[in-house]
Amino acid sequence: MGNKESMASLLENSTLGDVPGNSSGITSTWNNPHQNQIFGIILSIAGSFLISISLNLQKYTHVRLARRADPLPYYKSKLWWCGVLLMAIGELGNFAAYAFAPATLIAPLGCVAVIGSAAISVLFLKESLRASDVIGGTLAITGTYLLVTFAPNVSQDITAEKVERYVVSWQFLMYLLLEVIVFCVLLYVYKRKGVNHIVVLLLLVALLASVAVISVKAVAGMIAMTLKGDMQLTYAIFYAMAVAMIASCIFQVKFLNQAMQLYNATEVVPINYVFFTTSAILAGIIFYQEFREAAILNIFMFLFGCLLSFLGVFLIARNQEKQTFQEPYINFGEIPGKETVDKIQPHSNSITYGALHN
Image 1 (cartoon, rainbow, N blue to C red):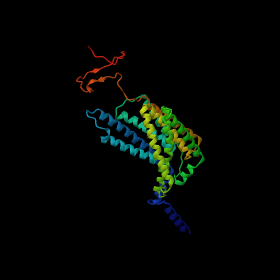
Image 2: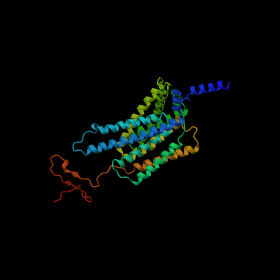
Image 3: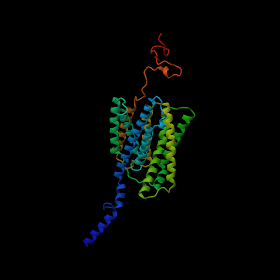
Image 4: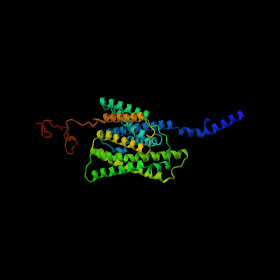
C-alpha cells in the first residue's frame, strides 16, 4: 500500500513539473512572482543604461561632425544610427519590464538613465566632474536601492478581463475624469492664452504619461500572457490599449519637444522626471492597485527612495548648460568675401560690440 502511495506521489510531482526538464517546470519558473520582479528590474535598468549610452553616442556624433571642415548630415553617420538602435533596444527593454514588475517600480528607475548619462559623459566625453554630480549620483543610487528594496511585491497576471474590470472601476473613472478636466484646462491655457510656462508643458506631458504607463503595462502584460499560452490578442481591449499607448506617446513627444525648444535641458530633464514618475506611481496605485496590501513602512521607505532619486536627478542636471565663450567674437574668416583671419573682439566695458585697432 505504501509503495502504491509513493508511486502516486511521484507521478503527481512529475506531472506538476518537479522533474527537471519538464515543460511545466519552465512555466512554474515563469510564474514565480519574485523572479519576475527581479527580471523586470534588470530589464528596466539595462534599458535605461542603453538609453544613456545612446544619448551620449548621438551627442558625440554631433560634436565630431561639427569639427569637420565639410560636416555631413548627422543622419548619414553610422555612429548616429548605432545610437538610435541602442535607444530602440533600451526602450524595448523598458516596455518589456512593465510586463514583469509593478509600474510604480519601473517608472522611478528611469533615474538610471540620468546617472548613466552623467557617468559616461565624464568618462568618455571628458566633461568636467562636479561635486554636485557625485552627491547627486550617490543620492540617486541610494534612492534606487530603496525603491527596489521596498517596492510593492504585487504579483498579478495582466489579462484582458482584468484590464476591462480596472477600466470601469469607480476609482479609475474618477481619476480619469479629473485628469481630463485638468488636461483640457492646461491645453486651453497653453493654446488660447499663450501661456507656455515649463510647468504647463510638462504637466501636459505628465498627464499623458499616466495614460501611457497604464496602456503600456496592459499591452505588455497581455502579450506576456499570450506568450505563456493564454491568448489575449483576440480581445478588443488589447487594441484599444495599443491605440491609447501610441497616441499618448506621440503627444508626449510633441509637448516635450516644445519644452526643450523653449527651455534648457537642465530645467526640463529633472522636472519632467519628477512629474512623469509621480504620474506613473499614481497610475499604478489607482489603476493596478499596486499598493493595496503594502505595509506603512514599505510605503514610507518607497516614497523616501523616490525623494532621494528626485534630489539626485536635480543635482546631476543642475548647471549643465552648454559651454559658451565668455567673450563672444565674430570670425571674419567665415564670412564670404573676407580674406582676414583676425577677429573683432568686444570690449567688456563698451556699449559697442567691438572696434578695430588703429
